[in-house]
Length: 111
Image 1 (cartoon, rainbow, N blue to C red):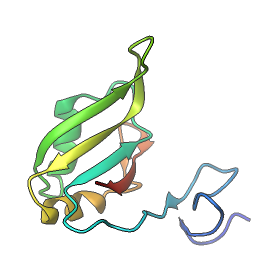
Image 2 (spheres, one colour):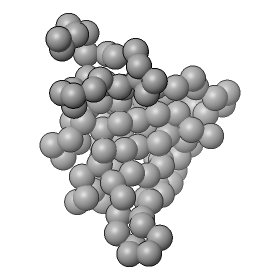
Image 3 (spheres, rainbow, N blue to C red):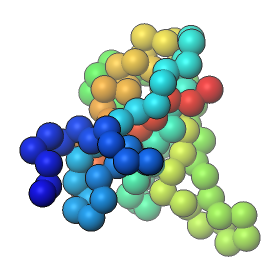
Image 4 (spheres, rainbow, N blue to C red):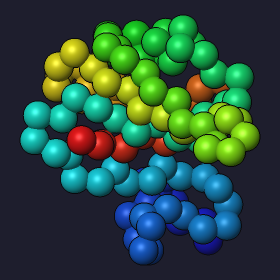
């Protein structure tokens, strides 16, 4: 322990318990997917910051939606990004687990 592989596929959530390391396996990709869930984000992230992050792989963002707490309005550290086409979405998905503002970003397909 820990497993030699950084990509973890076991367990009910697909993540690696305990160490906080490893990249969670993404769910099945929906047909014609143009949106991604993004999580484990720094509370200092901005629209410009996330746009530049995905621009590293030529994935142009159409829209960003941040999630906030219903009562307090505080940012939850997660959101959704929409891309112009499925190709850009696939490029963006390749960044799953990459470092963004000191944290490994969690990315998954969504519809």
